[in-house]
Image (cartoon, rainbow over all chains, first blue to last red):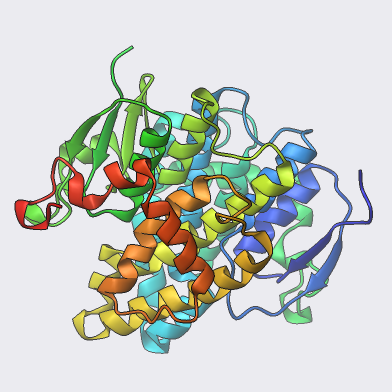
Length: 189
Length: 214
C-alpha cells in the first residue's frame, strides 16, 4: 500500500503538529519532516489522526466501545475546537500584544474548567480509561501551552496527573517540541 | 430504549449540525431548548452544567450517556445507527470529509461564536467575525476545488455538509462578500433544498420565537 514515506509538514512549537507527531510515534510510522514556520495553524489534525487510525490500526488510538469512542472524540474536540483555536498564533496576533496573555489564559482556563470536570467521569490512567487515545494526544500539547502562558494548574489535578504520566511515555518524549529537526538551539532539550 | 434528548438552541450553528444528522438518520428525539441569551444564558445554569460541563449546546442524551461536541455526537450516531451512511467507505475520502468538517468546526466557527464576540467588544465584532469567516472560506474554497462533486467530497452528503449551512447562514449576519466563493455557495444552495436541512432549520424549531418563525 505504501508508496513513499509519509511527509509531515510540521512546526516544532505547534501543538497541532505535536499531536500528529505523537500519533506517528505511537504507531511506529517512519516519516520525513518538512519544517514550516507558521503564521496560521490549520484545525485539521484530528482528521489526520483518524486517517492514521483507520489505515494503520495498531496500536489503537480509539477504544472499541462506541460510547468510549464518543468520550474520546468529545475530549479531543473540546481541546481542538474549544481551546486551541482561541489561543493560536494568528488569533493572538489579532488581539494585540498587550492583551495576548490574558486572552490566552482565559481561553485555556475556561476550557480546562470544563475538561477537569469531564475527566472526573471518564479518566482512568489516561483521559478515557487506561489506554492512551486521541484525547491524550490533544491534552499534552495543550498543557504545554498552558505552561507557556503561565496558567495556574492547581485547580486541575486530574489534567496535571494525566499529563505527567503521558510525558513519561516514549512517543510523547521523542515528539516533544524541544527535540524536533527545526527546534532552535536555545530551545533544544 | 427511551427517546434521545437533544439540548439545543434554535439559532446555534453547532446544534443545527446535530439536528441535520438526526433528521438524515430518521431518529426521533425530544428537544430541550437552552436559550443562550435569556436569564444571562441558560447554558450557565447549575443544572445544565452538571449535564454538560462545557456549558455549550448541543448536548445529546442517548443510550444512557450524554455527549457534547457536535462532531463527536455525529460520529457516535454514524457508528451506532449506520444507515443511511454519512461517511464514505474509502479512508482517504473519509479523511477529506473530516478535514473539511474540522476546518469549519475548529478553524472558523469557534472564532465567531457568541462568547468570543462578547470578548472582543462590540466595536470590533463585525471585523473580527468577517476576518474569521473569510480567512476560513479562502482555504475552504481552495480545498473544494479538488474534493467537491455535487457536495464537498464527491456526490454524497457527509458530516462536512452538516457544517455548511450554519456557517454560511452567518455570512449574511456579518455581511461577508460571497463573490470569491462560488463552490461554497453552489453547495450550500443544493443542501438547503434537502428535507433534512429544511426541517432542522433555525426558523422551524420548537424554541424559534414567533417573529423569526418561517
